[in-house]
Length: 279
Length: 157
Image (cartoon, rainbow over all chains, first blue to last red; front, top):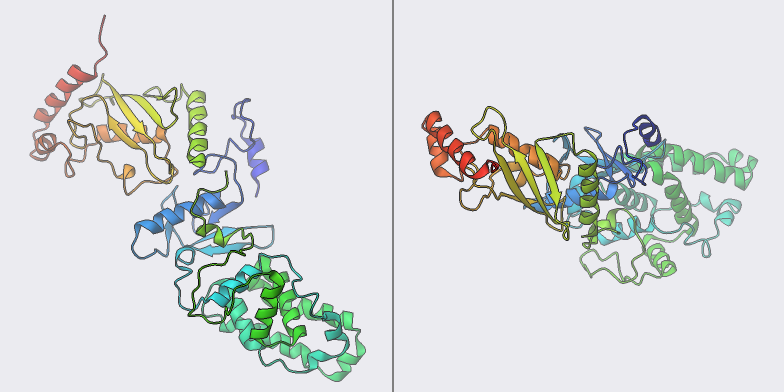
């Protein structure tokens, strides 16, 4: 974070070194930090790619993938990598999830597809779903009976965690209590004001858990509600829009090999790429 | 491949810059192959290796630094953890305990530390290990010193 500061304090890097940050390099590549990442116990800093590659090497040495990683610098046991810190939020990736991700029982193809969606451009369904009409025509007053299942899957996918019931019910409670407020409230406010208030409330409820992905999550939630599709229809339309022809993602058993329509996915899926990281 | 090359180049620059910092280690990269290095290390003081200069050969894998370099003694040395014929070194950080934060320079330092503190319970050189384990320190030291004189001492004149 304070790389600039640290650099200016240390002045022993030779004049010939062109790249800044040489005086305080990543311990693995010895180059300047690319996408700073921290281990969760000792807080030693690495490039995201470097520490991820090392995690993979360590995992490869064990028959069962380990749940912790010894810091290359101090040997402290760490359980996750903290990255994407932007001053207010960060992302976290667990050591065992990295490797075991595909084999863990709850994490189905459908979860994977939902997670991938978060790496695509937002507004996938905006041609199809009319969000402003949803607010104008009071469509939100009709209950959505798929919301619980949709939320559960969404949050499981984002957190890569099986037991998310507390978070799901927390967010569901906020959504429900907003949508079911008395008529008086709904008639007083403009659709835009209602929409804004809804987004603020849900964002505040979700942010402690979803951090940097909160905004996108709230947009996806609004889109799902406004579509009034059931989950299957929603998935089909969504993938159609993305141009991913993965038929029947919902059929969890059918573990077809990954399609060729992979979007460019920066973080998690870097793992599938066995060739050396970008030169 | 590209990553290991880039990292070795960084180490190369670091070695050039800090030549004087550790006078006991002289690391040299092969002129034509950045994956081959040799090092000259001074035998640590107050050990039978004192006064000797030992040559190490490094062979760096393409997966470096995710995989450790292979290192062996080119100079004959009588030490429980170094194979007397091949120069192979038994040192945990070159195997299971490897960490990508090690550098060729720090590996040299670890090898100097190993010279000063042999581990006779995991010997590659059984004769040497047995001398130490049976408590014959004098026997071990005189053998080690003899080989230091024979093989590791700079030729005079």
